[in-house]
Every structure is written in structure tokens, then in C-alpha cells.
Amino acid sequence: MEVVAVLYRVKQFFRGIFASRLSKDEVDFVKENLPEAAWELFFQMNRADRRHSMNVLKTALELFDDGFREQDFPYLSKQDAGNLRQLLIRCCLLHDVGRGSSMGPIRKSIAVLLNRFFPVWSRRYGRCDSRSYVRGLLYRYYHHGELGGELLRGIGMSTEAAIISLHHKKGRGNMLPENRKLLSILKEADSLN
Image (cartoon, rainbow, N blue to C red; front, top):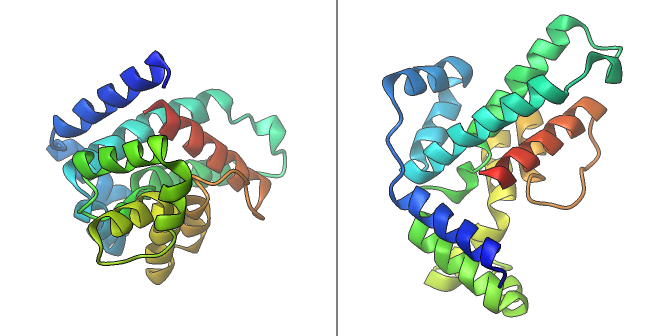
């Protein structure tokens, strides 16, 4: 394993273990930008994932503000661009809801290590959900995007679901070009945090 990759994972682990609680302003921000049914999904995530989502959001908004050029999408009005920014906010806040409350930093670290050292076995073993500790852990690790998408479709957030379902996949799916751009921003912001 590369030294840089190891250091990144160690840093990620400690950021998760020592993740700070959301401030009152951050909680208010979440409630202002998500429908009530989505708040529940957001606040069911563990503290580390909630903090991670806020960090991803900050990075994504910087990328959006720096890289979403109106000339790339001339058919969009100013209001449409504002709506896309709001869609990005919702996607960032909800991108890891499929992990649920049980996938904390320690369980995630176990999955990361299994994936790193036993990738073929881990992928095969994690193909289906199970009450088995390891199989259930790997399933949630590999499929949390799709699981989150299902949860979001269940509360009527189909556009967010389509984007979030693909945020750990290689392709960009069959969606509008501006939504593909949001997916690219989400993927990059997630990888930086």
C-alpha cells in the first residue's frame, strides 16, 4: 500500500473517531435545505458521517462556484442554476444515508482493510445483505449509494436518488448533462474528504 494512501486512511479514521457534533447553525442549515422526511435520514447517520457530509458540502460548493460555468449550459436560467446549487446541497448532505447509523469509523475501517487486502473475496462476500457481521458490513460498504438511493426514492427525492446511487460507480448514468456535472462535483468533493 502506498504511504500516501495509508496516511490518508489513518487521517480519515481519526477524523471519524474525533468528529465534532454539528453546531446549532449547521443543524438549522440542514433543516432549511432538506425536506422533513430527509432530515430523519440525515440525523440517523452517525456523527462521523454527518460531519463528513458537511465537509463534502463545503468542498462541493467551492467546486460548483468555481467550475459551473453558465456558458456550458446556455439553456439554463439564473434560477435554474440556483436550483442546481440547491440540488447539490441536498445530494451532499444525503450522499451517505445508505450507510445508516451502524457504519461508524471502526466498521468502515474494517471494510476498507478487507477491501484492500482481500478485494475479490470482499466483493463476492459483500454481494448480498445478511445478518452476518462481516457480510452485512461489506454489503453496506459496497452498496450504500444504492441503498441511499432507495431510501430517497421512498420519500419522493428521485433526482437526488439517481445522483446518489451513482456516486461510487464509474459511470455517470443516463441523466441530464447538468446533473452529470453535479455527480462529478459530488464524486470529487467526496474523494477530497
